[in-house]
Structure formats: C-alpha cells, structure tokens
Length: 115
Image 1: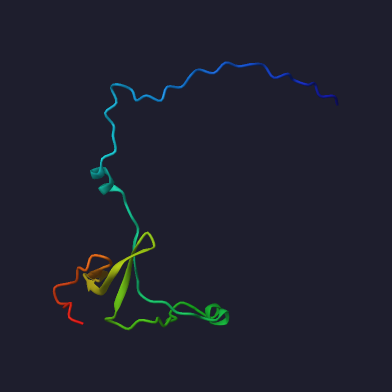
Image 2: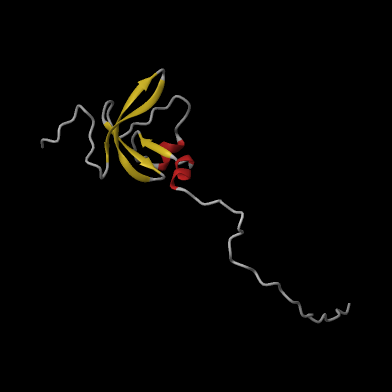
C-alpha cells in the first residue's frame, strides 16, 4: 500500500482585535463573587488504624476518634483553616457554632480574651 504525500497549502488568518465591544457592559464586580459556592467542612475527629483493622470493619462497627464529645472542632473552607467551633445538634442534624475565626481576633460572646 503506497501513501501519497500531501503538500501543505498556505492559509491567511484574520487579525484578532483585543478591544472590548462597545455595547458590552459586562464587568466582574466584587458583589458577583458573593454567589460563588465554597466547600465548608468541619472535622469531627481522626484516627489511625492498621490495615487488618480497616478490613475487619462491618456495618455497626464503631471507629474511635481523637476528639471527645463537646470538644471544639476545626472548620475549613476549601481545605484552608477558617476557625474553630462547637458541634451542636439542632433538629436531629449536626451543626457547628463558630467560636473563633482565625486572624480576626473575633471570639464568641461567652469567651474572654484574658489568658
């Protein structure tokens, strides 16, 4: 089977203008960013397990975590630390009451800044 060689032919490209169309009023405003969804997570706790222990897990198994009930939890926004809070149960759902936001010095009403 014999292939035939093709020759490249010349092509002329149009010039692209970088100017904004005169009738375009679309500009990103800081206010527009308020509607961007972000993933917020609260860490209930962690543990380390051996492979054999993970393989023996079954429905009904209980995994011990490194935090106690009522202890503060870390809050993250897109895996970046936001602050700390207390896990609370409202209407059979877990929620986090924010106690501290990193970098703001803001604390809940019940906490004092006296150390």
